[in-house]
Image (cartoon, rainbow, N blue to C red; front, side, top):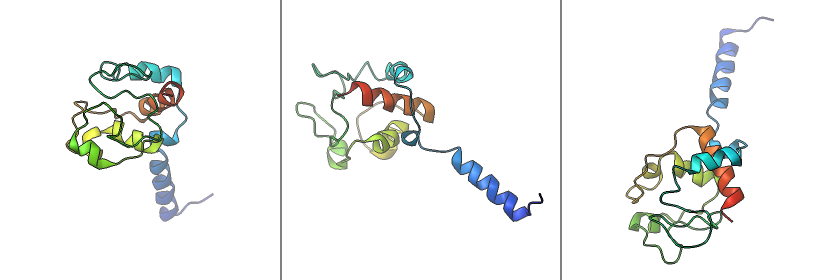
Length: 128
């Protein structure tokens, strides 16, 4: 089989795009996500109860950013009006200040898409 230069270039482009699949599109491992969540656990909890430094993440899926009663969100997070789902959580956790500039979360983000997919799977399983 002979491939033209254009066909070869197209195949490389498709392969490159496939390698940057967002974490929300990947099947994550909730057990591994628990380990990733350890980075978040100082400030957040997945079970209802007392709030920590950050808002409680119980019921995060479907909730609007800056809307949990009893937590003092930054004006930026209140104005963002993001509906949290796998896609928006993936974007936020990648680099929080890129999605919501001026938010108060002092966390650089999780650049690894597999870690984010595992974290999202953990949140889906535990943050009910």
